[in-house]
Image (cartoon, rainbow, N blue to C red; front, side):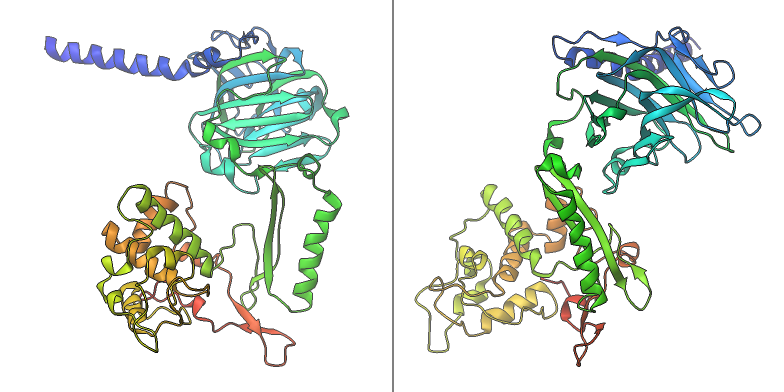
Length: 478
């Protein structure tokens, strides 16, 4: 019996330690702050001293956490906020938040003021950093949505019903938002006159359904240095939507892209397109136009998938270089070392001066030629290529051809894995390329753009019969 009691005590201590460790995340970030920044704790962990709002009715402190809660009977008609009594302009805020239930969102209000809405004096007019579910920035009671998570960056890293670790860096007219170590938004307000000194607000969204949101940590520094402290270094080059002017782009000129694409669609020169422009690490334009499937009436969307055809070739080259970097092959190795059939390749006039190398396959100097249609499996296709006459001496000239299919087969032989499996394990999954595959899932197939070609009279479009659209199980596109 004593042994069981000891186990229970140890279990309780373990759980308490884990809870304390989780609650201390914001505190742990203090050691990462620049030397000149002095942290202030907006929440003392005990009560709501220093805050004002509908305390008692909607906001309280439970087990060291700020809780915002409504129910079906007392849901606010307008979003209500727990506001700091002190006002802030340039600051860094490090905190954790969790939406316990509902599929709505919460957020942090800043750069504004308290206003009365629906008989609640604690609504807010100003900027709102939203999470989870509806990520982005909102200008409450003025411009509405001012920044959207169009690329789904925040959606992928945020947690709907669990603790999210966050940092907001708000300086000048620029707001940066980090969620769980990822920079998900970096946006500058084109109207700096609207970026006012004001209280910081914790949002409880207006909702006819019960909603509960938790906040903890809430470490703030004023006039911070211009660098993030919780973002992982790998996110330095993350592409996010940004202001065109800050990237040296003309916003008016960018608007012309969509207009030109719509003109092509109207002229039936193409069914549709999704255009994207990025500069200096920021996406400054993304716009879908036209149809992904004309017969079904399905519009192009930001997440429409396309057959990338021969853009598979640079991915294949990357796979070869992975094996090269691991010392498992050399670029000047003869292909016949891995695929014996290539020892007997020949020109129409006789035997070539030398055999084909892996480097030849990567640089389109192999002499191989075909329409690049796969004949069954990759192994079968490559065996047939080895039996086809070479168009020229290997290494003697450049001609676009099927050499990368041979390189892909070399990857299979050296790695001992099917080509698509190697790409998935070594490239797509590590890079979170979740929508890149040789064989789309049923869900992905619903987002796939159909291929079209001009009609015989050149006045319209019809479904394309190109082999690229062949997604049958026994083929692997090159």
